[in-house]
Image (cartoon, rainbow, N blue to C red):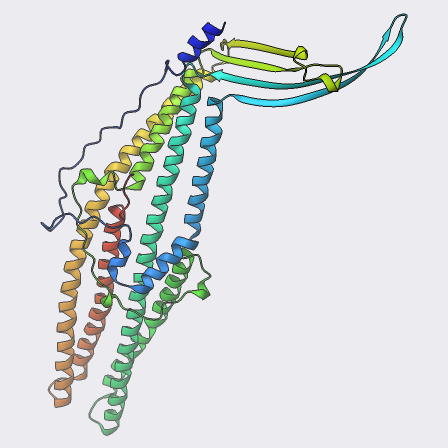
Length: 457
């Protein structure tokens, strides 16, 4: 029996009813279409946000790393997955338990009368399922792949949170700047209105001129409350991202123009797949699903279980460990499923369909990653151009406004010309702030699309 057992254990894991995992082949672009530069590759670093040179942004992201609830939940999911690995790996090892019994028994013996006796029996039991078809190994591998997927999910969550903090912070700066522009323009318009009212008293301007400027003042004033509301809402959103109550977070200084412009240039598209945690997560789920198929197929075949028990039985506690009282038992059992109502084969079909679904998801994640980078490269290029053109528009609008004021004082143009140039300047200044925001958010989006410095270990 011992010889047969040795051969049986030697074949442990030798048989496999599953298929070896192979990474799906997805077509990879040879180059990016919209890099717009011939500079060498400069992938993001793991602390990519420091490239904006904003101490306040660094503080906010550090706070988010410590206290963001989405990151905390992702960490908990990793711990759960690690526990599942330990649970799934347990059947690969023997289970051993120990126990002891003490029995007091009273019997009636003919001619002798009733007798009472004790029986003591300490015992150790061990059992082990021979993983001949690889079911337990496949289940353990599936759990390990799921644990890896949970780690990649955590990295994806962290990248998303960091990008959201940066993007929301820039939005707060832009709204503060837009609010300042609106208030400055309102102050200027009110100053002009007062001047016109004085001129009306001496008869150099008409009531219509004053009414038109009064309308401009009212329009500029009405634009301020919505901006103040958006600013407060953006700060509240930033507070949620950093895990703080809204009243504990505020942004009182800084403008978009003070931020640095970090350089980022993607390398070859084929390198992207090793730098995106969401791609790694999708593949890890595929690996787990492939192992689940192996486990489901192995369940169709016989299972072999070895059990052993040993101990002592004695009527006297003082002699219970005497070698002569030793007892043991060895058992080998083979179980073959015969009729399960289709449950086992249904499980195989379910796991195979799940793998097919995840295969489609993996393909979508990969091509979406390529498209995401292309979109953000285009966004960075176009917002850079937009910001430059809008800056030129502001310069020209300010010059036209200055000319109009000078000529109105000289009496060569009327107030309507000044009002037109004043409105054009306000609109251009507000649009410039929004163009700066779009550009900064496009840069953040590119960092995010390139994996934010993450790399597959």
